[in-house]
Amino acid sequence: MIKRIKSGDVVALAVAVIAVAGFSYQAYGLSAPPALVRIEAAGTTHLYSLAESRMVKPLPEDGTCELLIQDKSVRVVASDCPQKICVSMGQISSTSQWIACLPHQVFIHITGATPDSDGELGVDAATF
Image 1 (cartoon, one colour):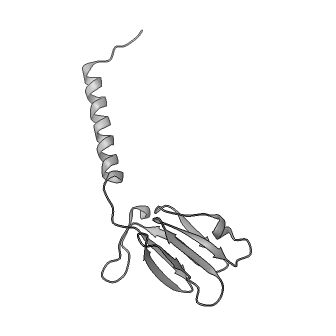
Image 2: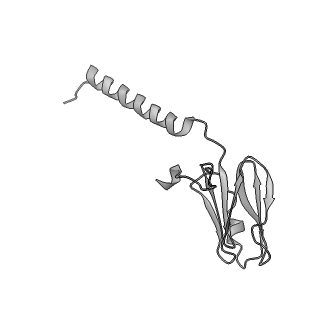
Image 3: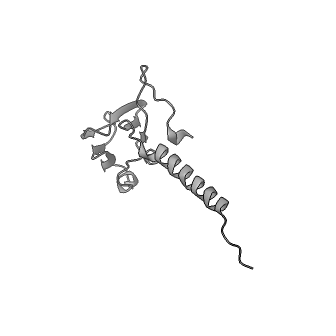
């Protein structure tokens, strides 16, 4: 027995589609502030904007680890660690991605928040 679609079914489907579209626009469609790259190395933390291109050397003198921030992404371009896994990870550009160089104890990730007046980052969407 085949059931026919009733007008209430069409209304419920339309409401569901509109709700999903609204939530999607809220989550992905709004312009966000420029993201920051958080680099933790040698017991220090550095924050850089993804909007500005630059080369970063987070290690003082212990080894070579060079990062390139360019085109709203960051990647490790050179490292003297044995396996160079950090170099092979490529570039990252969203808050769900990270790069780690374990021999040099360098951790790189992108935050969607801007620092507050104390220089600390607040809770971002990746935390939840």
